[in-house]
Amino acid sequence: MKVQRIILPQKTPSEGECEMRKLFGTDGVRGVANVHPMTPDVALKIGRAVAYLLRNGRGRHRRILIGKDTRVSCYMFENALAAGVCSMGVDVFLVGPMPTPAIAFLTSSMRADAGIVISASHNPFHDNGIKVFSSDGFKLPDDTEEKIEAIMDDPSLAEAQPTGEGVGKAFRIEDARGRYIVFLKNTFPAHFSLDGLKIVVDCANGATYRVAPAVFEELGAEIVKVGVEPNGININDGCGALHPEMISGLVQEQGADMGIAFDGDGDRVIVVDEKGNIIDGDQIMAICAKSLLEHERLRKKTVVATVMSNMGLEVALERMGARLVRTNVGDRYVVEAMRSHGYNFGGEQSGHLIFLDHITTGDGILAALQLLAVMQDTGRPLSELATIMDRFPQVLHNVRLCRRCGPEEIPGLDKLVRAMEERLKGRGRILIRPSGTEPLMRVMVEGEDGSLIETMAREIGEHISSAVETG
Image 1 (tube, rainbow, N blue to C red):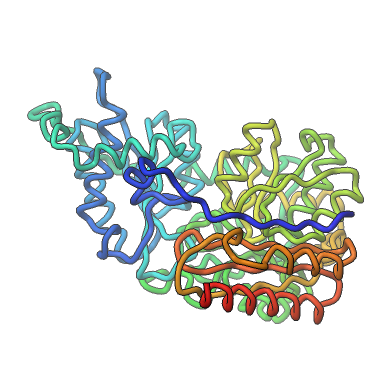
Image 2 (image 1 turned 45 degrees about the horizontal axis):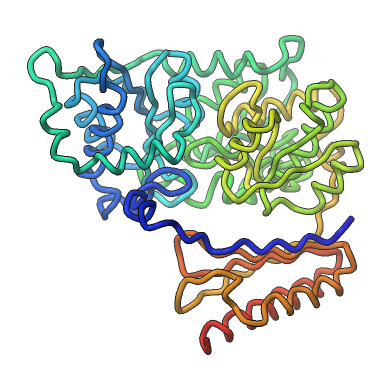
């Protein structure tokens, strides 16, 4: 295997793109709640703009579905978005706290024209975010997000607001959770059950706190619940997919068969085997890919992951006769590659796992069910299944800079990296990429020798820091 040197340049958007994409990032709008851009005023404008784009040129009332996680600030954003949508003559379906993938599923299954999620995913409670799904359940493309931003402050929008009977209405959908639970259970093979299994389920005090326990219990498992008492401020707080070590000990104490940890909005999953070992998204992808391949359901014998996935995943896939296609960081880029090239399985090391045959986005509960199906199909415990992949040691360093720049602008960096490639002798990877939001350069080095890659990462970081300061 050839060593992979990946240096991602700083993206420099065009002047027009800079003007239009001030709010939307790679996964919607996100920030500290009640601080621009995450304010009720901006949320209302987003609601109006999304509704206007849907309503424009249509006769009947359109419908937009709105869901949220358990943050205390979700109440004000839910009301602001609903007010903006209704002010443009579009109806609103309010489903309350629900996982992000549930909104994607319900938007499509309920024939809504769009779905809006209020969540900052794995971020702490004081942050929040807004992301929008199309009627087909996929995240909005960049050009549509640009249109939303372009018309948010357009004065002509006020002129298009209806009055009287033309104003939209808001409806609470009481059975939304039940619909999603039925959908999830139907993705689990009917000839299997979870009878006899004991599972620790950590819902991160987030959006899965009602749905996930119900799904696993109804399929027959004995559940030990963790993180199912949200109070508005304890989401992701020392629990969930960001802190799987919390359930690692609990799995062993309880004699459980596995532990499952979700993040705040339920689109990620990290699991723990019966021995307490933490198993990340890369390892889950390797396990599920082998099963899909054996059942001839892995399209083009290909898995899609990002540049951050461990090289051990690539080696494991090659060994089983499959291949790995890498994308930039972000689950939306994984989905875009899957849709563009006809692949049906992919994900991220962080636990976003996309089974495109079932759903349009990462779904932590669904992914856990597919992993459980492999366990049932093979009759093997999770610790044995995880031996399919040997992780390469991986070191990550964030280098804080005095200004934002791309790796290609740093003198001598290319020469230094080339020299380090020789030292890795074809059994490692170097990835250097700028942060999209901060003056940071992210350095990742993989290889078989942990001390060597630690030294390399430190040397690269010191070179970057020195070159930028003196440049």
